[in-house]
Image 1 (cartoon, rainbow, N blue to C red):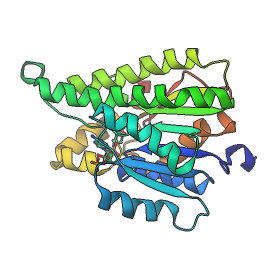
Image 2 (cartoon, rainbow, N blue to C red):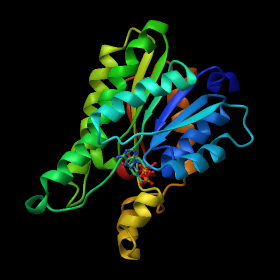
Image 3 (cartoon, rainbow, N blue to C red):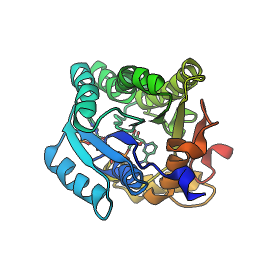
Image 4 (cartoon, rainbow, N blue to C red):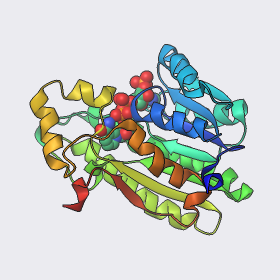
Length: 254
Ligand SMILES: NC(=O)c1ccc[n+]([C@@H]2O[C@H](COP(=O)([O-])OP(=O)(O)OC[C@H]3O[C@@H](n4cnc5c(N)ncnc54)[C@H](OP(=O)(O)O)[C@@H]3O)[C@@H](O)[C@H]2O)c1
């Protein structure tokens, strides 16, 4: 059974792989045998993350600096990742940001940045890499959406719009690629403790707001994304496409 999840010989690109969920998922893919390219904005963090991702594995890795808010840098990332480690088999569109403000205070700058990083960059990378996956008859595209793609909280206007947008794009992309051996799915995490959520919720009552919504009564642990990710990234998930899978302790079941 283990061979269904084996990623030896596959190459993955994980955006936002320098910390939080992206780092954990890049590590999972490397442990399963994949070569892994990670991308984010800060070289120092990328370098130390890469060491942690590859430690004890036989996988190859590379890190690239790219700002997902800049279209030309996202396009360059798709080219550079292939130059560094070869054709990309698994694309994990994970990099994401949040800017909290009620609808009557949303700025154009915040709206544009959240849309660019969370929604446009995943489209650009998918567009750039899907053709080669299709030609080679195998590929996995995984969008990291959010429970906030289906439900929300005040102030998450841009964030929820992008996370719902990723689910819509997952459906359409899956249909475009359905007969090609390339699957497209979304993971909808509930609350997980990462640099993003720690920075956004310094007050314990904010953290509690999320805990109260999770029937399991706790936040997720980053390693709890490993199973769902490997299922979607490997041969084990070959008949799953167009799915939006919550990993949320039951939040969205309510
Ligand atoms: N944590 C949760 O509870 C949770 C729940 C649901 C969904 N999610 C989603 O999961 C994904 C990861 O979240 P996280 O909590 O792990 O966030 P995080 O700790 O803030 O990490 C975000 C990653 O994305 C990179 N990034 C941010 N802006 C970027 C940009 N403009 N260009 C390139 N890279 C950028 C960051 O590196 P640099 O800052 O160095 O660029 C970092 O590597 C996001 O899409 C988020 O919306 C998270």
